Amino acid sequence: QQPVQSPQAVILREGEDAVINCSSSKALYSVHWYRQKHGEAPVFLMILLKGGEQKGHDKISASFNEKKQQSSLYLTASQLSYSGTYFCGTEIGDDKIIFGKGTRLHILP
Amino acid sequence: GAGVSQSPSNKVTEKGKDVELRCDPISGHTALYWYRQSLGQGLEFLIYFQGNSAPDKSGLPSDRFSAERTGGSVSTLTIQRTQQEDSAVYLCASSLTSGRAGEQFFGPGTRLTVL
Image 1 (cartoon, rainbow over the protein chains, first blue to last red):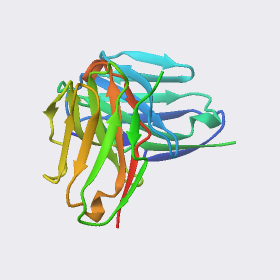
Image 2: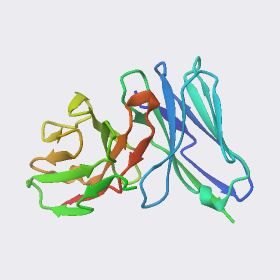
Image 3: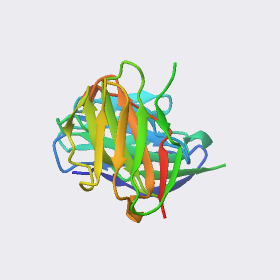
């Protein structure tokens, strides 16, 4: 039931783009994205509620393919502040969110 | 306004002792979640509350773990007869609504170390 995230880790230079993928073996009602910086609590980025919906948040956006039970998080022109671990959380209709193991993103200057 | 608070921030205990972890959610938030995060691991779901009731306790690792919520507010996670594998950061989150509509606000966590 836990979603699978890929890649597990990625290192980028400032200004480069990244894509983080999240896939589930079950049909999804929603997908939630959070970012956790080292030693801090996770912070909400966005929720995607409908199939095919794409949301944006500054230079961070996400898509949700309901049919494929997948979501992707896009980070464009990455900034140093984007470093951290990104978690996707999936909700299958039972009102609880199950998080993946996370993707560690490190941005180099 | 005040965010989610957790206490204690750190807890060191001896194997076999019981511990209580407390979570104060944001006022008015009806949903409350407990997660466990081990070093380098993801967020492991433990239990969630809608009001004072816990519709889903399936994430609790064993019968040594229990949780309650009173008055639709404060929640306590209790671990009995702690084991070394219980060492982790325990995170609490609250949400205005549950599930698909619910942005979760996380507390700073309680770091539990079992010696």
